[in-house]
Image (cartoon, rainbow, N blue to C red; front, top):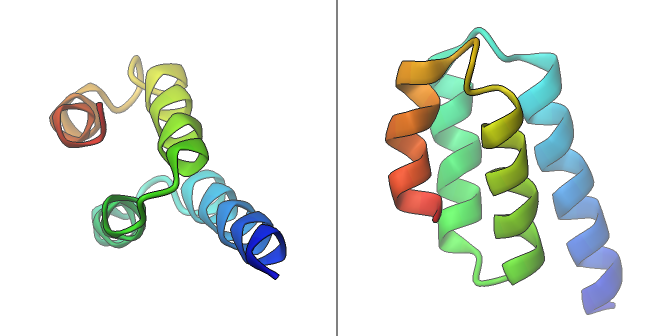
Amino acid sequence: MLEVLQGLLSHSLIHTFTDILSLSHTHSHAHTLILSCSLIDLRRIAHSFVHTHTHTHSLTHSYTLRYIA
């Protein structure tokens, strides 16, 4: 049950990040979900995503990286 929940949550977070990149409110909400979750896999997913998109969203993501790393 926990594995299914982890899968759904990570899938949902990835979609939140990729589908609505331009909305800072969505970024904040998604990052809050990751921070409130102690699953290391989700933190890794978020961390790699942030690295991938740093060149286009440097201010938002460099700020976020401090909290996820």
